[in-house]
Length: 320
Image (cartoon, rainbow, N blue to C red; front, side):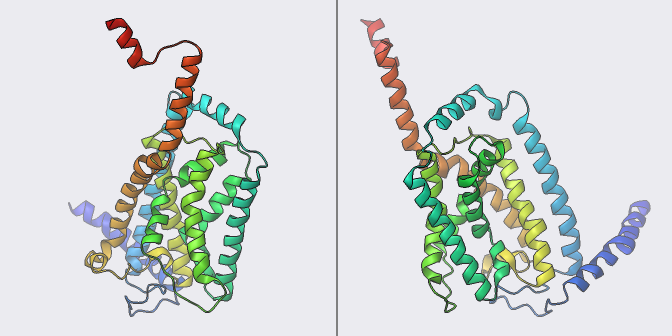
């Protein structure tokens, strides 16, 4: 027991405290008084010591989770290498609407909305908020549309995004329509988030991308990427600039979140994992149900053309 205390004391004295003082120095713009009503500015809601410990622990945890999930997803016999996925990929790549006018129109709307967002953030003097997840997701959708459809990276980027649809639904349910006097701010907010919700459905139904089979390992991979983006980039940039990017420095102005105190980020990471599963296993499955019915109808039509009876009819014939 004394040895454990000695080791912990040594780590605290020689590593944690110097690192905490370093974090405090680089975050010199952070005020000490927390205004919970202003969720745009960062404060020392969490101590420099806790920021230091959580920054190391969360990033190590999520990186290890990402590596394990990637290994499980890509190993032989997993969903990624299933014959079914290969057949779907060939079928979809043969039916992609290359050069279709609607593809171009959707891409123009995505790029136009992002250009307006850049204009609003830069001239509204809050350009750091271009790192907000919804704006990054918009860039991710643009990348999936302009990237080569045969690329493994492009396919994985699109299928990872399908785990983040919950964030768009939250933004639409609790909209931040703060007016800053710039042109089309409110209109672009609604345009951006409806595009984030509807464009993935369009890409699925037009055959622009194949949706990976349900895979818990890929859900973990997508969650790990999402969490790394928050724990490494948003937390790090937030400390450097004093901006409360996606509540990494100060919790949302909610009694529930405030009741969690210094553990609010741990709770947010846990809830986010559940929401990623709900997005892929429930929301995306519901949104793509029409495509599954269409595939089922095509399969039945092909069976009828080949003279193969349906399962129900086959049983009825045997009974007769």
